[in-house]
Amino acid sequence: MPDIDLVVRDITQEMQQRTDRGQVATYIPELGRVDPNAFGLVVIGADGKVSAGGDSDTPFSIQSISKVFTLTLALGKIGDRLWQRVGREPSGSPFNSIVQLENERGKPRNPFINAGAIAVTDAILSGHQPREALGEIVRFMQFLAQDPSIKIDEDVAASEQRTGFRNIALANYMKSFGLIENPVDFTLGVYFHHCAIAMSCRQLATAAGFLAYLGRNPSTGLSVVQPERARRINALMLTCGHYDGSGEFAYRVGLPGKSGVGGGIIAIAPGKASIAVWSPGLDAAGNSHLGRIALEELSKRMGWSIFGV
Ligand code: GLN
Image (cartoon, rainbow, N blue to C red; front, top):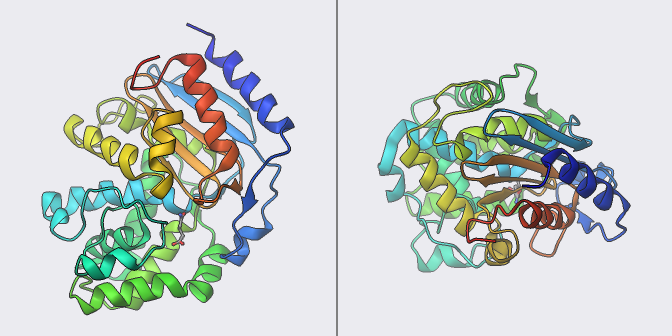
């Protein structure tokens, strides 16, 4: 088995030198200010051992990576009833697509496209004030990462709130089918803010640890969900975590993963590692370009693909 510290070091150096870095997202204006040369990689093993490279402690906007954690919270809150409101199939469409919603009578394909994540946020919000729901999400992230310093980047949240016309359209469209229970503004306010949580690769890899180890976080020893739930969340990440790039990610990397337009990706090697990578430049599907390449190299060199070596 190759030495993970050396593999992380080598991949970090290779990625830092590459000039093909993709395009930083600019549709949320605040994200366009991020340095495209940043690169971070953190791998946490079964024993809680951390291997880190590059800008591993720099917080960045986790964006859609937050959807894994809101899904976990919503399943904890209402269990399988969540699946009455959102499906479990890959969409084959961009993350912010609206086309399928009409044919499928407002029920989003899966919890990771924007429409699905907004429906999940709505489920967390029901019975609470927006501020309480948001507090619950941020505290969950702090608990998972064992780091009370994690917070929302208010500038990013305000930036998306000003420009998030597509998400506003998606939420209103679902509301017209009765699939959003709360006032649309409230649900979207919580959604924009949880996407704007800022975390480093180290914090994200720690927070995702429970998915790699049967629901129990190896860094803290704390049980977060039952093994069956961790397995199912991983299945959804594999099939839906990269939108219309999910097939390509499975083909190249072979691990459950979830991307965000801030350039982060978390990936899970079940029983072996929890991984977070960050490179802000995106590919055409809105997934981190070098993040995916780094994970492909890591999975290949360590023999971690769930489909075999
Ligand atoms: N907040 C972003 C949006 O709703 C999240 C998208 C993403 O990370 N893919 O557009």
